[in-house]
Length: 114
Length: 108
Image 1 (cartoon, each protein chain N blue to C red):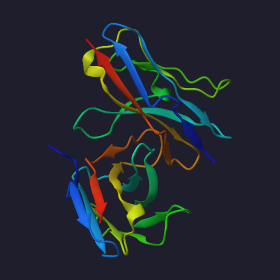
Image 2: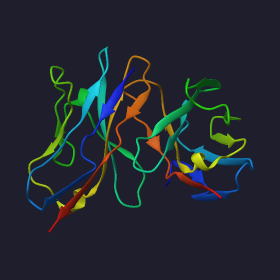
Image 3: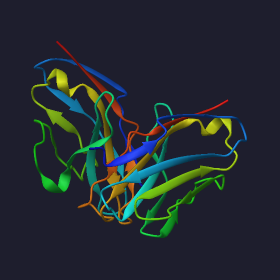
Image 4: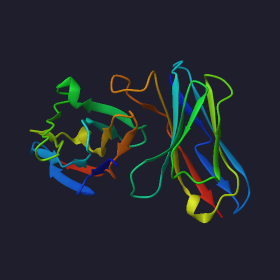
């Protein structure tokens, strides 16, 4: 009954080799988020979509891109992964923005860069 | 800018003892505060939010604007409370900022 599904759970890529992480949801939520979480650090918001409107955080590197082809799917593309991009990537959804719409998280994808 | 600080990375308590997880924040506006929890091998999920003023699984948290704190408390810890706990803040732009988390271990 998983509602926010991230694939794969573990992803290994080579330095500089483009990689795509995927997230799907069965909640029909309007908002989808991507967070990056490095070891022992807080999850950091990279960007989010409200429906088709893309909202990038000011300090998200250009190396990170996202696509949301429809309500259910959202992708995180890392164009040229560096060693510093190794992290857990969390996808989350919410029905709306605002405090009455809590975030629903996926299990995350752990990215290793070799 | 908004910031959430959880000063304790690790917290270990005995079963039946009280547990308090500290959370301090900085934000110039009127924040909304949350606690999220991640149990072993499970996804991050909402535990409680201050606007609801509710007790969830025996946990409560009070927003203290004077001290800019939102500490999470439970009077009698249980083994199933062992988890990673994240304090989070939502500001006027509704974006959620997380603290670095506190790992709680409840020992029998």
